[in-house]
Length: 533
Image 1 (tube, rainbow, N blue to C red):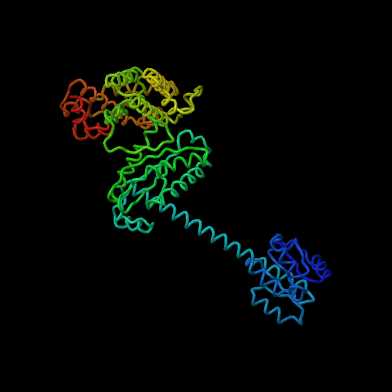
Image 2 (cartoon, one colour):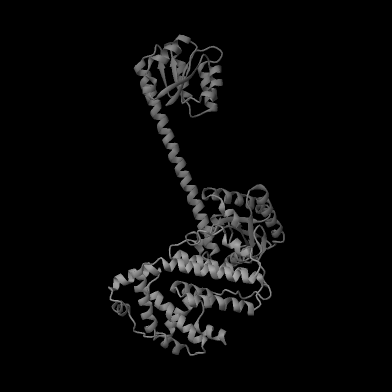
């Protein structure tokens, strides 16, 4: 319904006008009436009419003056002039003021109705146009915002070396030359992830507003969210002076804590002389941020160029992670337990600090979660009776080596039991037969899946489907993992000739074997042999 305000000094005319037309059927409702322009001006903010029917000749304030003042306040309201023949000149002036139409008195109801319907169509068309314009503006704004996020993320990942990408940085107000750069990563602390998803966007926007406000007074600053949803600030300083950056970051941390219901941890990368070095500073900021897992959140961490004594090599290397994940996938409980015993024994022998152990524990938890995700399971599916809502916090609260070792042991074995016990009896039997066949024939470089399928009396395609469904990886992937595990065992037993090891585990091409070994173990065979020595 469109609202109508009647402005006329004749009371009976106003009453007659209210009943002369089927207003609601036409899509209108009478929202108010006034006996002169001054009274109508006071009513306008309250009534907010879409259409005003206004007489020209009224006391105190006539129609022309009223229309002029009303349009100064609101350009969207439409005016329909009601004018006698003797006031025709006034009506023409009203049209010059932007009045939609005029109807001569005495009122012809059909003419009035036609004029109102024309005005309704005009209002509807204008509002539709405004909506479309708003949509276009919103799309343009979202497109520009997305482009900015993409450009900055490309920069952080080291993909902004081309001339075109440099021009895109310029378009965003970021000069690739003439500044020294440094990155800051701001992340909501783990305990604040309990906020509902719909509120996280608001929370992150508040943090971004606080961070940018604090930074922009001291440095050139652009910001974006990285691929993991963390706020990244890219800072620029003409002279490369970032002396007060830590103090500003501390102010950001305190402001977030005082002004909101949550906390953040901030990681600082080192400064760099060129825009091409920004990816290195960003990675350093991420590394600094990881100190939160050992020292707790709501702090500012600065990446150290020198590093800490005794902490240059982590306990949980890429090689160890690959080995544990392969054992969990295969489902060999005995070898997994041996791996865990060996891992913690080596940690004791190295006299690892509690901080290093806690960090390794968190990384092993991450591997366990990856294993569950591959099997389309979640932590909650496995540990329904757990009293620990946050495993990372639980690891951080551990006080002794023994406590951590026992908890990790139970976690891994329970996850493996849950995943592997869910498989059907028939499928389990077939899978075990396949694994046994591969275990006995992995050294045959001509071993094919067709051979394996015949050994278990199953169609090739169906076997591939069942194996992938039950184990979450392909037969070829499993065969490769077994071959790499056996190759590692040979190296551990003292074999040093890579070609011999490759041949014994089923690879005719030593170069291809080396590629597979590095893919699964994170290190080349030659480097692995050198490390053993």
